[in-house]
Length: 304
Image 1 (cartoon, rainbow, N blue to C red):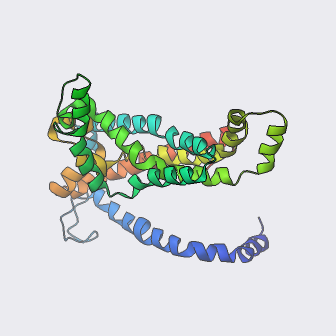
Image 2: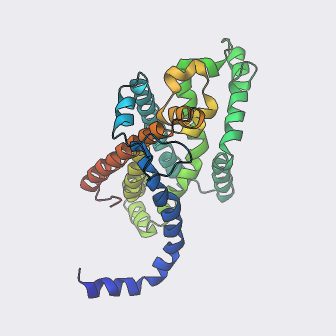
Image 3: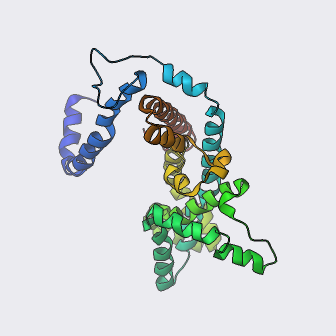
């Protein structure tokens, strides 16, 4: 593209670039400037000391190697990947199916009620949501009352390691599926209605219209959302896990994010945990890059 062509595109889209400017500034301030702090991953950093100075102790990849050789490495990587995979496998398709089903509802009042009700959990703070969840699953909670009524045995589910993945995945789905469906709903409403009219004239029923018109129309959006979800695999949902897990479930619930919290903020090992966070970021970026390449090849849609 020639320089003249680039200037012409810039001039034609100056309003859009102006709208983007505040977001770009915020991202630069809060996402790029703090990356300067990654330098302490290669030091034995002491709080209050300058990043660059005569007394700075450079240690190379010492902290990276220490994490790799740690007895917790396998457990943390395994738990993080397993919980994220479960969340992706069980939770990713729910907003898509929900949006497809909601699109078939013709009673506007009921449709708006269901939409609003599904969005609400997303706007409940994580602390409140986890507090509600803990009260549901405690020995005297509604879940145990239901289990007892059906002839089962009440348990302190929060301390049962085998129950944690289920609690985690269902909680994530409950909190986010309604909000995540907004994007799919907006794409569905932009589909040309003449396509549905033509399909109806050809005798297609509503299920066939959904499968052959609606679903293919949202595939690029599904691909983009999947790429972004893959990029967060090593992130898991640290906030939720921190609020839900207890020492009894560390074996299955302890992930990289919670380990960073314990060792970094509670243990004061800033350089060590910065190195772990850096590993996490680099792997996430690599996974996004690979997922983007695959998506671009299979669907023609990609982030870059």
